[in-house]
Image (cartoon, rainbow, N blue to C red; front, top):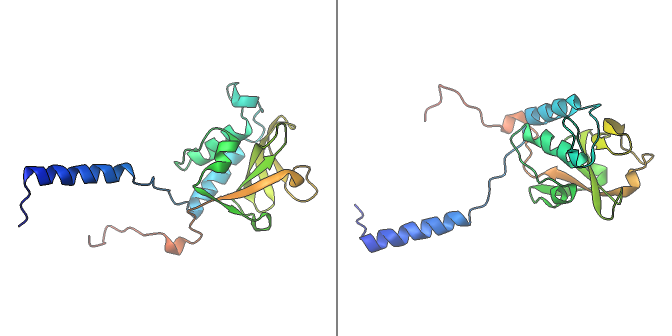
Length: 176
């Protein structure tokens, strides 16, 4: 049996509290069904009007649209496309490796620097709140698209599970 003096207990509690201050925020996993849910949810917004800053009710701008897509699986993202591109919960991938669920950030679309973001429904189809199209729309993202040359980066959620087999299964029969 371990016996702590009050002073030692206070020291132990102080250390534990200070360590919890430095604990890193957990980064949730995205599972295949999460990405399906995100794709379905994103598709529900097609045709919604575009409004810079999403100031009008039931309107979107590019970054508020991306926020909503991730919120459906419990992930909160920063408000602006620039801040979203800097979020360390994403990793950068090559343009040639784009897949469903990736975010594509564009530069110099209406201001210098990162100024637009789109969500990839599949490796060649993006859905985004388009300033030029004045609504949320799907577009083929390939070398013929005007935004192709303005791609700044492609980002992928850091914790993605591609296989159902890796997902922990729970059963009431499991011994705890």
